[in-house]
Length: 288
Ligand code: ATR
Image (cartoon, rainbow, N blue to C red):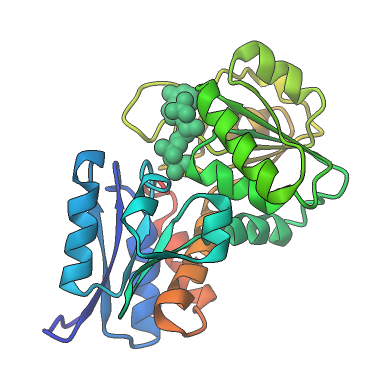
Protein backbone atom coordinates (compact mmCIF):
# COMPACT_ATOMS: atom_id res chain seq x y z
CA UNK A 1 0.00 0.00 0.00
CA UNK A 2 1.07 3.58 -0.65
CA UNK A 3 1.66 5.64 2.50
CA UNK A 4 1.41 9.41 1.99
CA UNK A 5 1.18 12.47 4.21
CA UNK A 6 -2.57 11.96 4.34
CA UNK A 7 -2.40 8.37 5.61
CA UNK A 8 -3.91 8.08 9.10
CA UNK A 9 -2.31 5.95 11.81
CA UNK A 10 -3.73 3.51 14.35
CA UNK A 11 -1.51 1.66 16.80
CA UNK A 12 -1.31 -0.93 19.54
CA UNK A 13 0.80 -0.24 22.62
CA UNK A 14 1.93 -2.77 25.18
CA UNK A 15 4.90 -4.72 26.45
CA UNK A 16 5.38 -7.14 24.83
CA UNK A 17 3.58 -6.32 21.59
CA UNK A 18 5.81 -7.79 18.89
CA UNK A 19 3.76 -10.91 18.38
CA UNK A 20 0.32 -9.29 18.34
CA UNK A 21 -1.89 -10.29 15.42
CA UNK A 22 -3.90 -7.06 15.67
CA UNK A 23 -1.79 -5.28 12.98
CA UNK A 24 -2.46 -8.11 10.52
CA UNK A 25 -6.19 -8.09 11.26
CA UNK A 26 -6.68 -4.30 11.31
CA UNK A 27 -4.54 -3.58 8.23
CA UNK A 28 -6.52 -6.20 6.29
CA UNK A 29 -9.73 -4.44 7.35
CA UNK A 30 -8.45 -0.97 6.33
CA UNK A 31 -7.37 -2.30 2.94
CA UNK A 32 -10.64 -4.15 2.34
CA UNK A 33 -12.64 -0.95 2.88
CA UNK A 34 -10.02 1.20 1.10
CA UNK A 35 -9.45 3.32 4.18
CA UNK A 36 -6.16 5.22 4.01
CA UNK A 37 -4.87 4.14 7.42
CA UNK A 38 -2.05 1.95 8.75
CA UNK A 39 -1.99 0.08 12.07
CA UNK A 40 1.40 -0.16 13.76
CA UNK A 41 2.62 -1.95 16.92
CA UNK A 42 4.67 0.04 19.46
CA UNK A 43 6.50 -1.57 22.37
CA UNK A 44 5.85 0.82 25.26
CA UNK A 45 7.24 0.03 28.73
CA UNK A 46 5.25 1.37 31.70
CA UNK A 47 7.83 4.10 32.35
CA UNK A 48 7.14 5.56 28.86
CA UNK A 49 3.35 5.23 28.84
CA UNK A 50 2.57 8.90 29.55
CA UNK A 51 4.99 10.16 26.87
CA UNK A 52 3.69 7.65 24.33
CA UNK A 53 0.10 8.72 24.91
CA UNK A 54 1.00 12.41 24.64
CA UNK A 55 2.90 11.67 21.43
CA UNK A 56 -0.10 9.91 19.90
CA UNK A 57 -2.32 12.86 20.78
CA UNK A 58 0.07 15.45 19.36
CA UNK A 59 0.72 13.43 16.20
CA UNK A 60 -2.99 13.16 15.53
CA UNK A 61 -3.30 9.37 15.37
CA UNK A 62 -6.80 8.12 14.65
CA UNK A 63 -6.77 5.86 17.69
CA UNK A 64 -4.98 2.97 19.33
CA UNK A 65 -5.37 -0.30 21.20
CA UNK A 66 -3.93 -0.84 24.65
CA UNK A 67 -2.69 -4.22 25.80
CA UNK A 68 -0.65 -5.86 28.61
CA UNK A 69 0.17 -4.28 31.05
CA UNK A 70 -1.40 -0.84 30.42
CA UNK A 71 -5.18 -1.37 30.30
CA UNK A 72 -5.74 0.05 33.79
CA UNK A 73 -2.84 2.51 34.03
CA UNK A 74 -3.78 4.25 30.78
CA UNK A 75 -6.96 5.66 32.33
CA UNK A 76 -5.19 8.52 34.08
CA UNK A 77 -3.81 9.82 30.78
CA UNK A 78 -7.17 10.03 28.99
CA UNK A 79 -9.51 13.03 28.75
CA UNK A 80 -12.70 11.02 28.88
CA UNK A 81 -14.03 7.48 29.38
CA UNK A 82 -16.95 5.76 27.70
CA UNK A 83 -19.34 4.66 30.52
CA UNK A 84 -18.61 0.95 29.90
CA UNK A 85 -14.84 1.50 30.23
CA UNK A 86 -15.45 3.55 33.38
CA UNK A 87 -17.57 0.81 34.93
CA UNK A 88 -15.09 -1.92 34.03
CA UNK A 89 -12.12 0.16 35.14
CA UNK A 90 -10.03 -0.76 32.09
CA UNK A 91 -9.50 0.52 28.54
CA UNK A 92 -8.34 -1.44 25.49
CA UNK A 93 -9.33 1.03 22.75
CA UNK A 94 -8.70 4.78 22.50
CA UNK A 95 -10.22 7.24 20.02
CA UNK A 96 -8.43 10.53 19.36
CA UNK A 97 -11.18 13.16 19.15
CA UNK A 98 -11.11 16.94 18.74
CA UNK A 99 -11.58 17.38 22.47
CA UNK A 100 -9.11 14.73 23.64
CA UNK A 101 -8.41 11.01 23.96
CA UNK A 102 -11.50 8.93 24.79
CA UNK A 103 -11.12 5.45 26.31
CA UNK A 104 -13.39 2.53 25.40
CA UNK A 105 -13.57 -1.12 26.36
CA UNK A 106 -14.29 -3.67 23.62
CA UNK A 107 -12.91 -6.70 25.51
CA UNK A 108 -16.26 -7.21 27.27
CA UNK A 109 -18.19 -7.51 24.03
CA UNK A 110 -15.30 -9.52 22.54
CA UNK A 111 -15.62 -12.26 25.15
CA UNK A 112 -19.43 -12.31 25.01
CA UNK A 113 -19.38 -12.64 21.23
CA UNK A 114 -16.66 -15.33 21.31
CA UNK A 115 -18.74 -17.41 23.76
CA UNK A 116 -22.01 -16.77 21.90
CA UNK A 117 -20.53 -17.91 18.59
CA UNK A 118 -19.32 -21.11 20.25
CA UNK A 119 -22.78 -21.58 21.80
CA UNK A 120 -21.48 -21.63 25.38
CA UNK A 121 -24.41 -21.55 27.81
CA UNK A 122 -23.82 -19.17 30.69
CA UNK A 123 -27.15 -19.35 32.50
CA UNK A 124 -26.78 -21.00 35.91
CA UNK A 125 -23.09 -21.64 35.26
CA UNK A 126 -20.12 -21.20 37.55
CA UNK A 127 -17.29 -19.33 35.84
CA UNK A 128 -13.74 -19.31 37.18
CA UNK A 129 -11.55 -16.51 35.86
CA UNK A 130 -7.78 -16.56 36.33
CA UNK A 131 -6.23 -13.09 36.67
CA UNK A 132 -7.42 -9.73 37.97
CA UNK A 133 -5.88 -7.33 35.45
CA UNK A 134 -7.60 -5.23 32.80
CA UNK A 135 -8.72 -8.18 30.68
CA UNK A 136 -10.10 -10.07 33.68
CA UNK A 137 -12.11 -7.02 34.77
CA UNK A 138 -13.79 -6.80 31.38
CA UNK A 139 -14.60 -10.52 31.42
CA UNK A 140 -16.05 -10.42 34.92
CA UNK A 141 -18.15 -7.41 33.96
CA UNK A 142 -19.37 -9.12 30.79
CA UNK A 143 -20.38 -12.39 32.44
CA UNK A 144 -21.55 -11.46 35.92
CA UNK A 145 -25.13 -10.69 34.86
CA UNK A 146 -25.72 -14.08 33.23
CA UNK A 147 -23.54 -16.50 35.18
CA UNK A 148 -24.73 -17.95 38.46
CA UNK A 149 -21.34 -17.68 40.22
CA UNK A 150 -18.13 -15.86 39.33
CA UNK A 151 -14.87 -16.88 41.00
CA UNK A 152 -11.69 -14.85 40.41
CA UNK A 153 -8.32 -16.36 41.32
CA UNK A 154 -5.25 -14.15 41.20
CA UNK A 155 -1.59 -14.31 42.24
CA UNK A 156 -1.76 -10.94 44.00
CA UNK A 157 -4.59 -10.90 46.54
CA UNK A 158 -4.69 -7.07 46.71
CA UNK A 159 -5.55 -6.76 43.03
CA UNK A 160 -8.32 -9.34 43.28
CA UNK A 161 -9.74 -7.51 46.30
CA UNK A 162 -9.81 -4.26 44.35
CA UNK A 163 -11.55 -5.91 41.41
CA UNK A 164 -14.15 -7.36 43.79
CA UNK A 165 -14.72 -4.07 45.58
CA UNK A 166 -15.02 -1.99 42.39
CA UNK A 167 -17.20 -4.36 40.39
CA UNK A 168 -19.49 -5.44 43.23
CA UNK A 169 -20.22 -1.79 43.96
CA UNK A 170 -21.00 -1.05 40.32
CA UNK A 171 -22.91 -4.23 39.53
CA UNK A 172 -24.57 -5.18 42.81
CA UNK A 173 -23.56 -8.83 42.29
CA UNK A 174 -21.26 -10.96 44.41
CA UNK A 175 -17.82 -11.91 43.07
CA UNK A 176 -15.83 -14.58 44.91
CA UNK A 177 -12.06 -14.24 45.04
CA UNK A 178 -9.13 -16.48 45.96
CA UNK A 179 -5.44 -17.05 45.45
CA UNK A 180 -4.12 -18.53 42.24
CA UNK A 181 -2.53 -21.60 43.82
CA UNK A 182 -2.60 -25.24 42.75
CA UNK A 183 -4.81 -26.12 45.72
CA UNK A 184 -7.40 -23.35 45.35
CA UNK A 185 -7.57 -23.76 41.59
CA UNK A 186 -8.12 -27.53 41.84
CA UNK A 187 -10.82 -26.89 44.44
CA UNK A 188 -12.56 -24.21 42.34
CA UNK A 189 -12.49 -26.38 39.23
CA UNK A 190 -14.56 -29.09 40.90
CA UNK A 191 -17.58 -26.75 40.75
CA UNK A 192 -16.67 -24.86 37.55
CA UNK A 193 -18.45 -25.03 34.19
CA UNK A 194 -16.39 -22.45 32.33
CA UNK A 195 -12.70 -21.70 33.02
CA UNK A 196 -11.19 -18.55 31.49
CA UNK A 197 -7.50 -17.75 31.60
CA UNK A 198 -7.10 -13.96 31.63
CA UNK A 199 -3.58 -13.87 33.07
CA UNK A 200 -0.65 -12.80 30.95
CA UNK A 201 1.30 -15.94 31.85
CA UNK A 202 3.62 -16.91 29.05
CA UNK A 203 3.31 -13.51 27.37
CA UNK A 204 5.17 -11.20 29.70
CA UNK A 205 8.65 -12.63 29.21
CA UNK A 206 8.47 -14.67 32.43
CA UNK A 207 9.05 -18.37 32.17
CA UNK A 208 6.03 -19.52 34.16
CA UNK A 209 2.90 -21.57 33.70
CA UNK A 210 -0.50 -21.89 35.35
CA UNK A 211 -0.58 -24.03 38.51
CA UNK A 212 -2.89 -26.56 36.93
CA UNK A 213 -2.55 -30.27 36.19
CA UNK A 214 -4.34 -32.19 33.48
CA UNK A 215 -6.13 -34.22 36.13
CA UNK A 216 -7.80 -31.04 37.46
CA UNK A 217 -9.43 -30.47 34.08
CA UNK A 218 -12.49 -32.69 34.00
CA UNK A 219 -14.31 -33.46 30.78
CA UNK A 220 -17.40 -31.39 31.61
CA UNK A 221 -15.39 -28.12 31.53
CA UNK A 222 -15.30 -25.53 28.77
CA UNK A 223 -11.92 -23.75 28.73
CA UNK A 224 -11.25 -20.38 27.09
CA UNK A 225 -7.69 -19.10 27.01
CA UNK A 226 -7.64 -15.48 25.91
CA UNK A 227 -3.93 -15.80 25.16
CA UNK A 228 -2.96 -17.11 21.77
CA UNK A 229 0.40 -18.19 20.47
CA UNK A 230 2.39 -19.93 17.76
CA UNK A 231 0.76 -23.13 18.81
CA UNK A 232 -2.01 -24.18 21.17
CA UNK A 233 -1.40 -22.80 24.67
CA UNK A 234 -0.32 -25.22 27.39
CA UNK A 235 -3.67 -24.78 29.15
CA UNK A 236 -5.70 -25.58 26.04
CA UNK A 237 -3.48 -28.57 25.24
CA UNK A 238 -4.07 -30.04 28.70
CA UNK A 239 -7.79 -29.25 28.47
CA UNK A 240 -8.11 -30.89 25.06
CA UNK A 241 -6.29 -34.00 26.27
CA UNK A 242 -8.74 -34.19 29.19
CA UNK A 243 -11.66 -34.11 26.76
CA UNK A 244 -12.78 -30.55 27.63
CA UNK A 245 -14.29 -28.21 25.11
CA UNK A 246 -11.62 -25.62 24.24
CA UNK A 247 -11.84 -22.10 22.80
CA UNK A 248 -8.74 -20.23 21.65
CA UNK A 249 -8.06 -16.53 22.18
CA UNK A 250 -8.30 -15.71 18.47
CA UNK A 251 -12.11 -15.57 18.62
CA UNK A 252 -12.08 -12.90 21.35
CA UNK A 253 -9.28 -11.03 19.57
CA UNK A 254 -11.41 -10.89 16.43
CA UNK A 255 -14.54 -9.51 18.08
CA UNK A 256 -12.82 -6.95 20.31
CA UNK A 257 -10.86 -5.85 17.22
CA UNK A 258 -13.97 -5.51 15.07
CA UNK A 259 -15.59 -3.33 17.74
CA UNK A 260 -12.44 -1.17 17.96
CA UNK A 261 -12.39 -0.79 14.16
CA UNK A 262 -15.98 0.48 14.26
CA UNK A 263 -15.13 3.03 16.96
CA UNK A 264 -12.23 4.42 14.91
CA UNK A 265 -13.88 4.46 11.50
CA UNK A 266 -17.63 4.65 12.16
CA UNK A 267 -17.94 1.86 9.56
CA UNK A 268 -19.10 -1.75 9.93
CA UNK A 269 -16.06 -3.96 10.41
CA UNK A 270 -15.37 -6.47 7.59
CA UNK A 271 -15.50 -9.46 9.92
CA UNK A 272 -14.84 -12.12 7.29
CA UNK A 273 -11.76 -10.27 6.01
CA UNK A 274 -10.47 -9.92 9.56
CA UNK A 275 -11.19 -13.57 10.35
CA UNK A 276 -9.42 -14.70 7.17
CA UNK A 277 -6.39 -12.54 7.95
CA UNK A 278 -6.09 -14.23 11.35
CA UNK A 279 -6.63 -17.67 9.84
CA UNK A 280 -3.77 -17.07 7.39
CA UNK A 281 -1.50 -16.29 10.30
CA UNK A 282 -2.36 -19.46 12.18
CA UNK A 283 -0.33 -21.05 13.52
CA UNK A 284 1.36 -17.72 13.92
CA UNK A 285 2.97 -15.63 16.61
CA UNK A 286 0.64 -13.86 18.95
CA UNK A 287 -0.05 -12.25 22.23
CA UNK A 288 -3.26 -10.30 22.55
P1 ATR B 1 -4.17 -7.27 31.09
O1 ATR B 1 -4.51 -5.84 31.05
O2 ATR B 1 -3.92 -7.85 29.73
O3 ATR B 1 -5.14 -8.05 31.89
P2 ATR B 1 -2.45 -6.93 33.32
O4 ATR B 1 -3.39 -5.88 33.82
O5 ATR B 1 -0.98 -6.70 33.37
O6 ATR B 1 -2.76 -7.34 31.83
O7 ATR B 1 -2.84 -8.27 34.14
C1 ATR B 1 -2.08 -9.42 34.02
C2 ATR B 1 -2.68 -10.51 34.91
O8 ATR B 1 -1.89 -11.69 34.74
C3 ATR B 1 -2.63 -10.16 36.38
O9 ATR B 1 -3.76 -10.73 37.01
C4 ATR B 1 -1.35 -10.85 36.85
O10 ATR B 1 -1.34 -11.23 38.22
P3 ATR B 1 -0.84 -10.19 39.35
O11 ATR B 1 -2.03 -9.35 39.68
O12 ATR B 1 -0.40 -11.06 40.45
O13 ATR B 1 0.29 -9.41 38.74
C5 ATR B 1 -1.42 -12.11 36.02
N1 ATR B 1 -0.08 -12.71 35.88
C6 ATR B 1 0.93 -12.28 35.10
N2 ATR B 1 2.01 -13.08 35.21
C7 ATR B 1 1.66 -14.06 36.09
C8 ATR B 1 2.33 -15.20 36.63
N3 ATR B 1 3.58 -15.51 36.28
N4 ATR B 1 1.67 -15.97 37.52
C9 ATR B 1 0.39 -15.68 37.89
N5 ATR B 1 -0.30 -14.62 37.41
C10 ATR B 1 0.32 -13.82 36.53
